[in-house]
Amino acid sequence: MHSVRKNKKKTLAAAALLAAATFTLSACGSGDDSASPVSVVSEEPGSDKAATVLDKPFEKPDLVLTDTYGKSYDLRKETAGRPTLIYFGYTNCPDICPLTMNNIAVAKKQLPQAEQDKLRVVFVTTDPERDTASALGKWLKGIDTQVVGLTGDFATIQAGARTLGISIEPPTKDKDGKVVSTHGTQVVAFSPKTDGGYVLYGEDATVDDYTKDLPKLIKGQNP
Image (cartoon, rainbow, N blue to C red; front, side, top):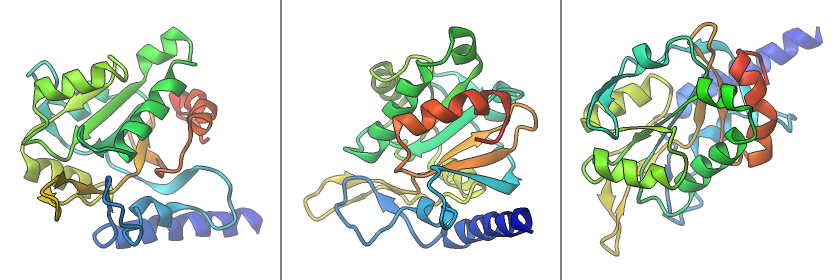
């Protein structure tokens, strides 16, 4: 009975995530606490885990974009059969994006080298006009040279994110004239066994959370 109740909670959490994705967003550096990140609704009530395991995994986005070398990158083809983490953000983000990527990078370095090489960490820009291949490459070089940075047509990126329940909006200028990109802040982990996006992490996930979970995600196990 307990397992059935638990699965029901997770199913409801996943449904809530999808339902809320188009309404709740987080603007990096906006200082607007009322704009709660989409990831909040994915948390299981009463759970202290950073990860939410979905009963119905997301299909990996069918995205063909441009990597930091200026070459075409077919997400499904290049990450097929590999443990993969995908995050949508932008390099000019002053807080959430660099923190999330650095947390993952620090945790990744705790893995044996062979497992580090298996893992694919993909950062897809939500601000492609400024985040050119060169700009992405320079930014990611300071975080982890193995991270795959992708840029391209905004509409294509937006549509791909939407298939994961992640909403992003075209960059806009705030009252001070600063360009801000508003986007969902969850990290989606894809299984090397099924290529399905089966685990979600919110912006509150810590280095310790990723350090603890990555060895399991590498194998396609539940954290």
